Length: 185
Image (cartoon, rainbow, N blue to C red; front, side, top):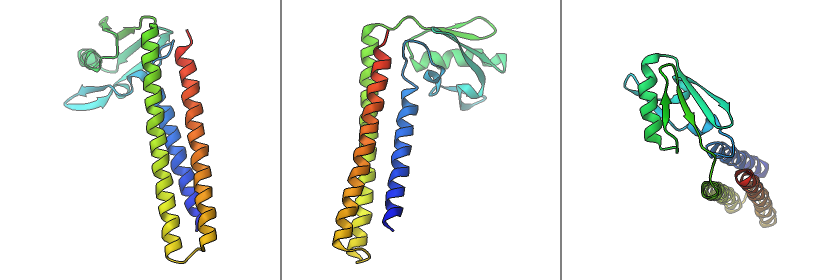
């Protein structure tokens, strides 16, 4: 029974860590990353659709992203959606595709992205702490139902805390790595 609680806690903590890493992909580093466009939705025949589901998105080089729609009629909608997303560049429509030319990042932009990365890390830590609370509540319920002894419950609380500390340190390490990546010129 306790192993089930620990496994569930590990699985949820892993998901929080994966979610953090996915969030990090939306931050711009020294070279452009197509994932910076992941949150952009385009009006596709009245439905909001993710940009990558109506076009081919490629990073041509370290500072240029090219977006080629599958239907030429989508060029204007893509251009409008990118402008509305306010990602720091103006879209250039050449009649065939939309190109985004990213200027080199300033020191202030890099520091701002570091702040965003740290905030994302804090959100992940809060999620992990909430997972710990749920695990501890499950142990407490088992102890109250007399399905485990007081000593087993104490050991279980210690194990839950060890897992929490492990995943919090993994989050800290991920944030530190992302910070060094963001500040690297």
